[in-house]
Image (tube, rainbow, N blue to C red):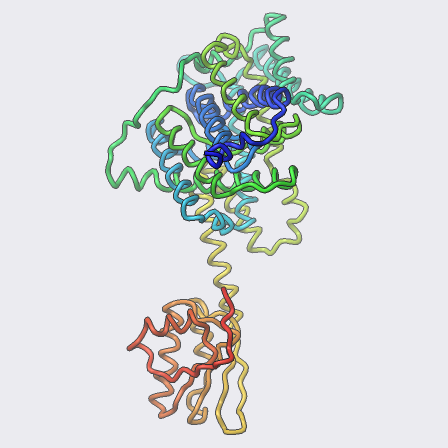
Length: 510
């Protein structure tokens, strides 16, 4: 029973006053961001608030570490915009639930480390494209509907909107110089809200977009066909959302580890995120992941336990249940200004400083991912193409590294010491290293500094042995690692050759 309670970290000392105040502050900063991202993606605003509540509560209780705050994050929501536009909300919920299943599987099989397969240039392109998409999407708030058509604001409505947005940005930038006790974005929203309400300024509000009044998150089974075609449609979105969420989550977890000098549990965080996203898919939430900004707000407020995250989630639910009349009067200009600052903060400006130091192929990958993200609004496709290009570039570069050192020993035996990995990309260069016609009757191919990686490599070795066999010469393979020998055993009947076993050779773990 004690181990059960330790799961929730109830055994640690908790400063209840600090935790409750931190939770309230986090909730106030999460509400406008969740609303903004939901509106950005074309979802009903309640979908964003439900996601903030569900993600926040589940991960606060079961997540990988105290102090980490999750909600309806923009990085995961942006992934679903294309699906929302093409197939509607029910397909989005299905993709969110599928993403949750994938995250749970990653946690169960402890595969979180494979998130590292997404190269840094792809992440730069993804983040920068995401920032541009967020920024450009806010321009929609400067439009209105006239006779069923969307047209740009003009005259006083435009000037009022611009003025309030500029004021919001100015407060977000300037208030931290006065005090950091309260989040600048929250202060900006409250000031602009007070001005609009106090002076009766006519401008677009949340109520003009949709109602945020509601009850508890309703149970809802996505109304979609249960067939292979549907699965193939939502799988890329679910997979990318799962990976993006875990990438951002595990990076945030590591950041909290550094700040608090403690250690979190990444696999447990994967399980918590997955469970929360499954619930989102069936309880009208847009899904999400850990949020870096809200986590930093939480830590700066002094929170070090799980209670603040629970308080934040319950506060959001209370606002949905009882505070909708107030939230619906929030001016969209304030939320737009905050989102402009979120876009600016999301952009990896450091990528410009290091661009001259990056390899050309990495620059190409990053720019390609960013362009696809901006033009198509399809982060799933952008990340997938970025990873494929990076993998192909890596394969090409590795293929050029295959080398062979050649010499004759005292017994007249020709030695080929192979350097570099032997795989599908390097097989042609490998075959060109050998001089079958002029070599002596015995040849040793030394793989001490190489590795037979795949069936293409096995086939290349087989072809070399066949060429020597036709010339009446014998080939010996030497210094094969255990996994390489296993590949050759699996290829029994393909390769007939003498393998020299070296009893003093220790296989280096991969």
